[in-house]
Length: 259
Image 1: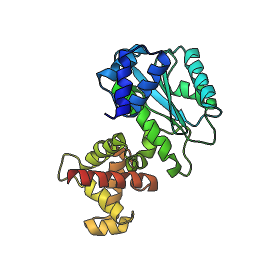
Image 2: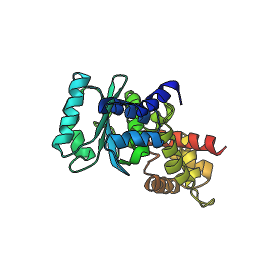
Image 3: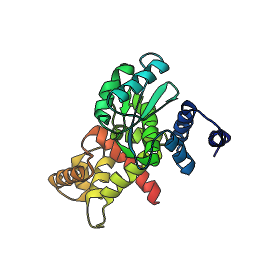
Image 4: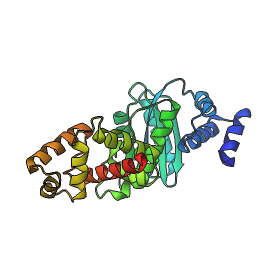
Protein backbone atom coordinates (compact mmCIF):
# COMPACT_ATOMS: atom_id res chain seq x y z
CA UNK A 1 0.00 0.00 0.00
CA UNK A 2 1.40 3.42 -0.93
CA UNK A 3 1.21 6.54 1.26
CA UNK A 4 -1.71 7.99 -0.69
CA UNK A 5 -3.76 4.83 -0.18
CA UNK A 6 -2.87 4.82 3.51
CA UNK A 7 -4.03 8.43 3.80
CA UNK A 8 -7.27 7.51 2.06
CA UNK A 9 -8.06 4.77 4.54
CA UNK A 10 -6.98 6.87 7.51
CA UNK A 11 -9.73 9.32 6.64
CA UNK A 12 -12.29 6.68 7.53
CA UNK A 13 -11.66 7.42 11.18
CA UNK A 14 -12.74 11.05 10.73
CA UNK A 15 -15.88 12.85 9.58
CA UNK A 16 -16.05 12.67 5.79
CA UNK A 17 -18.91 13.55 3.45
CA UNK A 18 -20.28 11.13 0.83
CA UNK A 19 -18.57 12.94 -2.05
CA UNK A 20 -15.15 12.43 -0.51
CA UNK A 21 -15.94 8.83 0.45
CA UNK A 22 -17.04 8.13 -3.13
CA UNK A 23 -13.79 9.54 -4.47
CA UNK A 24 -11.80 7.43 -2.01
CA UNK A 25 -13.77 4.29 -2.86
CA UNK A 26 -13.22 4.87 -6.57
CA UNK A 27 -9.46 5.31 -6.14
CA UNK A 28 -9.22 2.17 -4.02
CA UNK A 29 -11.20 0.05 -6.48
CA UNK A 30 -9.25 1.36 -9.45
CA UNK A 31 -5.95 0.44 -7.78
CA UNK A 32 -7.26 -3.06 -6.98
CA UNK A 33 -7.73 -2.52 -3.25
CA UNK A 34 -10.64 -4.72 -2.16
CA UNK A 35 -10.00 -5.53 1.52
CA UNK A 36 -12.40 -5.07 4.44
CA UNK A 37 -11.61 -1.38 4.74
CA UNK A 38 -12.77 -0.80 1.16
CA UNK A 39 -15.85 -2.91 1.86
CA UNK A 40 -16.55 -0.48 4.70
CA UNK A 41 -16.22 2.47 2.33
CA UNK A 42 -18.75 0.93 -0.02
CA UNK A 43 -21.09 0.10 2.87
CA UNK A 44 -21.11 3.74 3.92
CA UNK A 45 -22.20 4.62 0.38
CA UNK A 46 -25.04 2.09 0.56
CA UNK A 47 -23.43 -0.73 -1.43
CA UNK A 48 -24.35 -3.61 0.87
CA UNK A 49 -23.62 -7.32 0.66
CA UNK A 50 -22.94 -9.21 -2.57
CA UNK A 51 -24.27 -6.51 -4.89
CA UNK A 52 -24.18 -6.84 -8.68
CA UNK A 53 -22.64 -4.00 -10.64
CA UNK A 54 -21.20 -2.95 -13.99
CA UNK A 55 -19.06 -0.11 -15.32
CA UNK A 56 -19.34 2.30 -18.23
CA UNK A 57 -16.49 4.53 -19.33
CA UNK A 58 -15.46 6.96 -22.02
CA UNK A 59 -14.53 10.56 -22.71
CA UNK A 60 -17.16 13.11 -21.59
CA UNK A 61 -19.00 14.88 -24.40
CA UNK A 62 -18.80 18.17 -22.51
CA UNK A 63 -17.45 18.75 -19.00
CA UNK A 64 -16.76 16.14 -16.35
CA UNK A 65 -19.38 17.73 -14.13
CA UNK A 66 -22.15 17.71 -16.73
CA UNK A 67 -21.44 14.11 -17.73
CA UNK A 68 -21.43 13.02 -14.09
CA UNK A 69 -24.76 14.74 -13.50
CA UNK A 70 -26.26 13.16 -16.62
CA UNK A 71 -25.19 9.68 -15.50
CA UNK A 72 -26.55 10.12 -11.97
CA UNK A 73 -29.85 11.42 -13.35
CA UNK A 74 -30.14 8.54 -15.81
CA UNK A 75 -29.58 5.98 -13.04
CA UNK A 76 -32.15 7.66 -10.79
CA UNK A 77 -34.68 7.81 -13.63
CA UNK A 78 -34.22 4.07 -14.17
CA UNK A 79 -34.96 3.36 -10.52
CA UNK A 80 -31.37 3.00 -9.31
CA UNK A 81 -29.71 4.51 -6.26
CA UNK A 82 -25.99 3.86 -6.26
CA UNK A 83 -23.32 5.19 -8.62
CA UNK A 84 -19.60 5.64 -8.04
CA UNK A 85 -17.96 8.00 -10.54
CA UNK A 86 -14.33 8.95 -11.00
CA UNK A 87 -11.75 9.82 -13.61
CA UNK A 88 -8.61 8.32 -15.06
CA UNK A 89 -6.77 10.74 -17.32
CA UNK A 90 -9.31 12.02 -19.84
CA UNK A 91 -11.68 9.12 -19.16
CA UNK A 92 -14.72 9.21 -16.91
CA UNK A 93 -15.67 5.86 -15.38
CA UNK A 94 -19.01 5.13 -13.73
CA UNK A 95 -19.79 2.09 -11.59
CA UNK A 96 -23.53 1.40 -11.31
CA UNK A 97 -25.31 -0.98 -8.94
CA UNK A 98 -27.68 -3.22 -10.89
CA UNK A 99 -31.25 -2.85 -9.67
CA UNK A 100 -34.62 -2.26 -11.29
CA UNK A 101 -34.11 -1.09 -14.87
CA UNK A 102 -30.47 -0.26 -14.16
CA UNK A 103 -29.01 -3.00 -16.32
CA UNK A 104 -25.92 -2.72 -18.54
CA UNK A 105 -27.72 -2.40 -21.88
CA UNK A 106 -30.48 -0.05 -20.75
CA UNK A 107 -28.16 2.17 -18.72
CA UNK A 108 -25.55 2.36 -21.48
CA UNK A 109 -28.21 3.47 -23.97
CA UNK A 110 -29.45 6.10 -21.52
CA UNK A 111 -26.03 7.61 -20.75
CA UNK A 112 -24.42 7.28 -24.19
CA UNK A 113 -25.20 10.90 -25.20
CA UNK A 114 -23.15 12.09 -22.22
CA UNK A 115 -20.00 10.61 -23.79
CA UNK A 116 -18.11 11.84 -26.83
CA UNK A 117 -19.22 10.15 -30.06
CA UNK A 118 -15.68 10.40 -31.44
CA UNK A 119 -14.05 8.45 -28.61
CA UNK A 120 -14.32 4.81 -27.46
CA UNK A 121 -17.06 3.82 -25.03
CA UNK A 122 -16.77 0.67 -22.90
CA UNK A 123 -19.47 -1.38 -21.16
CA UNK A 124 -18.40 -4.09 -18.73
CA UNK A 125 -20.23 -7.32 -17.90
CA UNK A 126 -22.06 -7.61 -14.59
CA UNK A 127 -19.68 -8.36 -11.71
CA UNK A 128 -20.39 -9.18 -8.05
CA UNK A 129 -19.24 -7.63 -4.79
CA UNK A 130 -16.33 -5.31 -4.09
CA UNK A 131 -13.85 -7.53 -5.92
CA UNK A 132 -16.18 -7.53 -8.92
CA UNK A 133 -16.51 -3.74 -8.73
CA UNK A 134 -12.73 -3.39 -8.90
CA UNK A 135 -12.63 -5.86 -11.80
CA UNK A 136 -15.28 -3.90 -13.72
CA UNK A 137 -13.54 -0.54 -13.26
CA UNK A 138 -10.08 -1.86 -14.07
CA UNK A 139 -11.16 -3.68 -17.24
CA UNK A 140 -12.92 -0.49 -18.30
CA UNK A 141 -9.77 1.54 -17.72
CA UNK A 142 -7.55 -0.92 -19.61
CA UNK A 143 -10.04 -1.33 -22.47
CA UNK A 144 -10.29 2.42 -23.04
CA UNK A 145 -6.49 2.66 -23.07
CA UNK A 146 -6.25 -0.25 -25.52
CA UNK A 147 -9.07 0.86 -27.82
CA UNK A 148 -6.82 2.76 -30.31
CA UNK A 149 -5.36 -0.62 -31.32
CA UNK A 150 -8.63 -1.43 -33.10
CA UNK A 151 -9.20 0.22 -36.47
CA UNK A 152 -13.00 0.14 -36.11
CA UNK A 153 -13.94 -0.35 -32.44
CA UNK A 154 -17.54 -1.24 -31.73
CA UNK A 155 -19.67 1.08 -29.64
CA UNK A 156 -19.81 0.14 -26.89
CA UNK A 157 -16.72 -2.01 -26.59
CA UNK A 158 -17.19 -5.34 -24.82
CA UNK A 159 -15.08 -7.40 -22.42
CA UNK A 160 -13.51 -9.86 -24.87
CA UNK A 161 -12.78 -7.45 -27.71
CA UNK A 162 -9.42 -6.26 -26.41
CA UNK A 163 -8.03 -9.20 -24.44
CA UNK A 164 -4.59 -9.29 -26.15
CA UNK A 165 -4.15 -5.51 -25.96
CA UNK A 166 -5.25 -5.42 -22.32
CA UNK A 167 -2.77 -8.19 -21.53
CA UNK A 168 0.00 -6.15 -23.16
CA UNK A 169 -0.93 -3.19 -20.98
CA UNK A 170 -0.57 -5.31 -17.83
CA UNK A 171 -4.21 -6.24 -17.14
CA UNK A 172 -4.05 -9.32 -14.92
CA UNK A 173 -7.71 -10.13 -15.57
CA UNK A 174 -7.11 -10.28 -19.32
CA UNK A 175 -4.05 -12.48 -18.90
CA UNK A 176 -5.97 -14.83 -16.63
CA UNK A 177 -8.86 -15.00 -19.11
CA UNK A 178 -6.50 -15.85 -21.96
CA UNK A 179 -4.71 -18.47 -19.87
CA UNK A 180 -7.68 -20.24 -18.31
CA UNK A 181 -10.41 -19.90 -20.92
CA UNK A 182 -8.33 -20.10 -24.09
CA UNK A 183 -4.95 -21.73 -23.52
CA UNK A 184 -6.02 -24.31 -20.94
CA UNK A 185 -9.17 -25.14 -22.92
CA UNK A 186 -7.02 -25.77 -25.99
CA UNK A 187 -4.64 -27.94 -24.00
CA UNK A 188 -7.50 -29.98 -22.60
CA UNK A 189 -7.17 -32.87 -20.18
CA UNK A 190 -6.48 -35.59 -22.75
CA UNK A 191 -2.80 -35.66 -23.81
CA UNK A 192 -3.79 -37.50 -27.01
CA UNK A 193 -6.18 -34.76 -28.11
CA UNK A 194 -4.60 -33.14 -31.22
CA UNK A 195 -6.51 -29.84 -30.90
CA UNK A 196 -3.74 -27.83 -29.23
CA UNK A 197 -1.03 -29.13 -31.55
CA UNK A 198 -3.16 -28.46 -34.62
CA UNK A 199 -4.02 -24.87 -33.64
CA UNK A 200 -0.47 -24.00 -32.59
CA UNK A 201 0.98 -25.52 -35.78
CA UNK A 202 -1.59 -23.72 -37.94
CA UNK A 203 -0.65 -20.39 -36.37
CA UNK A 204 3.06 -21.19 -36.59
CA UNK A 205 2.77 -21.69 -40.35
CA UNK A 206 0.89 -18.46 -40.97
CA UNK A 207 -2.56 -20.05 -41.22
CA UNK A 208 -1.55 -22.36 -44.07
CA UNK A 209 -3.73 -25.48 -44.20
CA UNK A 210 -1.34 -27.23 -46.57
CA UNK A 211 1.78 -26.63 -44.48
CA UNK A 212 -0.04 -27.57 -41.29
CA UNK A 213 -1.33 -30.78 -42.84
CA UNK A 214 2.15 -31.63 -44.11
CA UNK A 215 3.74 -30.98 -40.72
CA UNK A 216 1.15 -33.12 -38.91
CA UNK A 217 1.04 -35.75 -41.67
CA UNK A 218 -2.75 -35.50 -42.05
CA UNK A 219 -5.17 -34.43 -44.79
CA UNK A 220 -6.03 -30.69 -45.00
CA UNK A 221 -9.68 -31.61 -44.34
CA UNK A 222 -8.59 -33.11 -41.04
CA UNK A 223 -6.95 -29.81 -40.14
CA UNK A 224 -10.16 -27.96 -41.08
CA UNK A 225 -12.21 -30.25 -38.86
CA UNK A 226 -9.89 -29.84 -35.88
CA UNK A 227 -9.80 -26.05 -36.27
CA UNK A 228 -13.60 -25.96 -36.41
CA UNK A 229 -13.81 -28.05 -33.24
CA UNK A 230 -11.30 -25.76 -31.52
CA UNK A 231 -13.38 -22.72 -32.48
CA UNK A 232 -16.52 -24.34 -31.05
CA UNK A 233 -14.68 -25.16 -27.83
CA UNK A 234 -12.86 -21.88 -27.20
CA UNK A 235 -15.05 -19.39 -29.07
CA UNK A 236 -12.03 -18.23 -31.10
CA UNK A 237 -11.55 -19.22 -34.75
CA UNK A 238 -7.91 -19.63 -35.82
CA UNK A 239 -8.87 -19.00 -39.48
CA UNK A 240 -10.05 -15.48 -38.60
CA UNK A 241 -7.14 -12.97 -38.46
CA UNK A 242 -8.35 -11.20 -35.33
CA UNK A 243 -9.19 -14.44 -33.50
CA UNK A 244 -5.82 -15.82 -34.56
CA UNK A 245 -4.14 -12.90 -32.79
CA UNK A 246 -6.11 -13.67 -29.62
CA UNK A 247 -5.10 -17.34 -29.83
CA UNK A 248 -1.45 -16.49 -30.51
CA UNK A 249 -1.35 -14.24 -27.44
CA UNK A 250 -3.06 -16.89 -25.30
CA UNK A 251 -0.55 -19.52 -26.43
CA UNK A 252 2.37 -17.24 -25.61
CA UNK A 253 1.00 -16.48 -22.15
CA UNK A 254 0.26 -20.13 -21.50
CA UNK A 255 3.68 -21.37 -22.57
CA UNK A 256 5.47 -18.79 -20.45
CA UNK A 257 3.27 -19.48 -17.44
CA UNK A 258 3.54 -23.26 -17.68
CA UNK A 259 7.31 -23.04 -18.10
